[in-house]
Every structure is written in C-alpha cells, then in structure tokens.
Length: 360
Image (cartoon, rainbow, N blue to C red; front, side, top):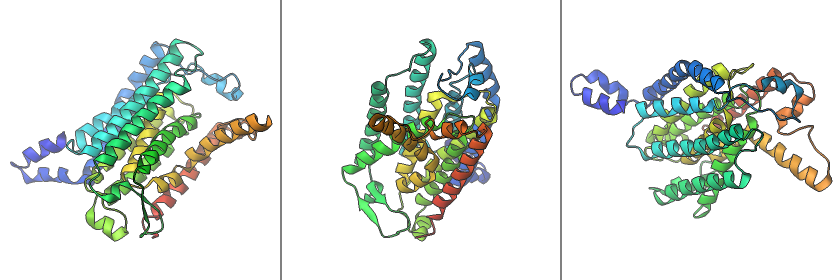
C-alpha cells in the first residue's frame, strides 16, 4: 500500500524512491508489527480478561501449570493483526506470493479461532474434532498446493532442492502437492504442539521466520541466487516483508508471553504461525532446510507420535509425558530452563540452516 504511495510521491521528490528497496521495507515491516503489538497488546489482554477468555489446564499435566488456569488465551489474534497490517502497508500488493502467504495464515488462524472458541464456550470440550480440524487444514493446504503447482512459471518452483548439493534438484511433478500438504499441515500442528510453555513456541518461530526472510530475499534476487547456487524464483523476494512482519509481531507478542505469561497465543496463533512458516518454506524451495531449522518443533511432534505408538503397541510410555517439554518438566527442570534451552537449540539449528547457503 505505502509502496504505491511512494511511487506516486517519487514524481515530486526522488527521495521517496528509497521505499523501493526490499530490505528497507522488510525492516519497516518488523518495526511496524512490533509497534502494533506493543500498542494493541495491553488493551487486548484486558479485553480477554474481562470476557474471561482464559486458558484451560490439563488435569494430568505438571502441577506447576495449575496456576496458569485462567490466563487469557487467544492472544494469537494480536500476532495476526500485526502481521496482516504490517504486510499490507509495506509489501507489494500486486505480488501473488504475498496473497498466498496471507490467505494461508488467515485460513489456518480461522481454524484455530473456531477451535479455541469451542473450547471456551463448551468448557472442557476438546474444541473441533480431529477429523474436522485436519479436514479443513488439508483442504486449505491442498488448495494452496494446486494453485502454486498450476501457476508455476519455472520448473524450479516445483523441484525439491537438496541442501549441500548445488546440482541436485528433484522434479516432483504431482508429488509436489503431497509435499506442500505435509509441510504446511505438519508445520502448523507441530508449532501447536510446542506451544505448551511460556514463550516456548514464539521465539523459535521468530528465529525461523528471520532465516526464511534471508532465503526469500536471496532466492528472489537473480545475482545472489546465481552466486549462492540456489534456484532463482522471480518475485518471491517480496515474501521477506511478510517474514519481517512475523518477526516483529512475534517479538511483540513475546513481550507479553515471556515467563510468567500474561497471555497465551492459543490455536488461533499457533496453527496460523506454523502454516505461515511452512508455506514460506515451500515458496523459497527450502523444505529440507526448514525441517532442520524447525528441529525443536519436529522433536516435539515425534515425541507425541512415539508416545502414542508405544502405549498402543506395548502399553508402556517412552516419556513421562508428551510433548517432550513436559517430560523435562516432570524430570524436575524448572520451566524457564526448558524454555531457554529449547531456544538455544533452535538458534543453533537456524544458524546451521543458514550455513547451507554457502556450503554447497
């Protein structure tokens, strides 16, 4: 939106041309989303508290979590508001990739909102049934995959890029749809499973979004992509503005979500952020690197799968409790220790993912 305004004003003063620079607009996206979060956050928390929209705590969870009952939830709406406004202000709205990431984020956010709302309205209800929730997620992911597949303008947009090898790109054909489905839906639910401690999910989301912004910028820049031996995808660099907005909104939310949390994001935030990360990874053709950077989300998800499978097959549990962060809590780790150590692991993994840009 402001890009168009700057283009018009540049007729009268050349200084407005500075807003044509993608890096500057990405930075302004970070700052705008962060400012919106700081401004809207306190009022939203008060409103959620007033309407008694509070977190429900599992009876079988760690005892230290019982004190969290009643903490305002559905704060993820704050993140989505900040991301959408910042992106609409600073991104090129004529870019199709911007609308893809916005629509995916808002669609998964809507699914999460309905799930949260049903839990709050019906007390101890589980919210949406697993079948309904995964059904809508699957529909959204497959629709996204179909659009990207049939609107692809170059073979690179539907190839699987293998990190560390500059000459290996696997044509996926129709399997591309399956890849999009698993990356988007899997990432969405992985972030949701990880969002069980104060700030545990949001900072890894911020770190990964920042790294994906770098990948988006490099992939959308002809000369940088050629230099780094990564596929060049025209116009995908604009997604860096969206990623920057995610970084700003996430940091703003962390201000209120840090231990001890004043607000939780709920499914409305977790499902949306996970899907957003997944679809950006697909757009920049870095699904395998994303799998590495999102290692904390992956191990949280795997811990749940292993726990359920082990209990059904043998009647015994592998972990004291799943997801994995609860296992460490029940081993006696204080909540802040679990959170910070998972943050450190994510930072290491994100830096490792970024290193793949040069190690080829």
